Amino acid sequence: MTILSRRRLIGSIGAGAGGLLLSGCDRIVAAPTVKHVLGIGEKLSFDAQRLVTDRAGLAREFAASDMSPVFRTNGNTMPESEAYQAHATAGFTDWRLAVDGLVRRPSTTSLAQIHTMPARTQITRHDCVEGWSAIGKWTGVPLKLLLDAAGVLPGARYVVFHCADDFGGDPYYESIDLIDAYHPQTILAWGMNDQLLSIGHGAPLRLRVERQLGYKQAKYVMRVELVDSLARVGAGGGGYWEDSSGYQWYAGI
Ligand SMILES: Nc1nc2c(c(=O)[nH]1)N[C@H]1C(S)=C(S)[C@@H](COP(=O)(O)O)O[C@H]1N2
Ligand SMILES: [Mo]
Image 1 (cartoon, protein in one colour):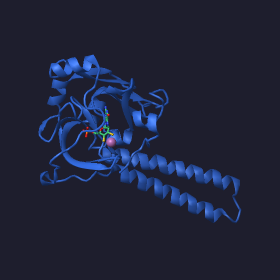
Image 2 (image 1 turned 90 degrees about the horizontal axis):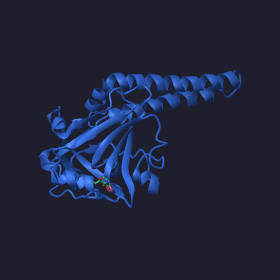
Image 3 (image 1 turned 135 degrees about the vertical axis):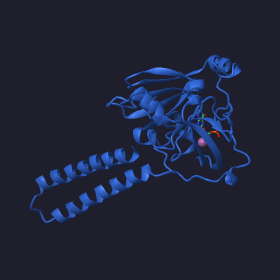
Image 4 (image 1 turned 60 degrees about the vertical axis):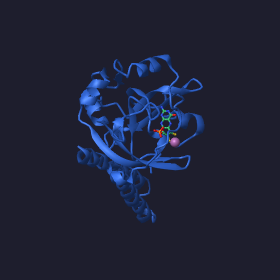
């Protein structure tokens, strides 16, 4: 699957660069600069290919002995909404994750069901833009499994994670593209360091998208929405910090 989609992506980006080259040739067919244009075309497809190949790569995984003795919390550590707090008090027994938007089968899934799905465990380093890092062990369902169950429609381009918390009334949310959504290390984690995820770290489910910075790791994920554009979500920047502070949408590390 990873290889297939990577091939398809390289194929389509290659075609795009080729198209660019062709229209360039149309206009300056016998001009002395044609060699120069060809050079740019080659560089473009090489860079595009390297970019895609690079994005399919795995984030480094660590040994248990590398795990940080303390993994601090950051941002919100307890959503204020009454609905969330009622679920938290009940141990999330009636809580359900919604998957909707551009999918064939919009649905909700109970946490108990999610716990029975195939899980992946990975020990990775979390890097916050504020200048701290920590190595922790995450266990959760690969996002791919939830997306395949829902049936992503061809028009979908982004996955939006709607969270239970907010800052001054602006809900926290994040988004990733489908390359990251299908990446094998992209999981909705329900476990951390061999325990059920704590509220401070984002219970009952939080995103791990290991090739990106800390603020992309949305905690308290309540709803996963497939969209064709980010323009109509929040203020259009693709995430709470992107909207409010101009943080980069693609926060690659
Ligand atoms: N819902 C939600 N997700 C969030 C945040 C938040 O405030 N709310 N903070 C982000 C930031 S900046 C970081 S560094 C990590 C911190 O995760 P942790 O509390 O598990 O360390 O969560 C990210 N995800
Ligand atoms: Mo962060």
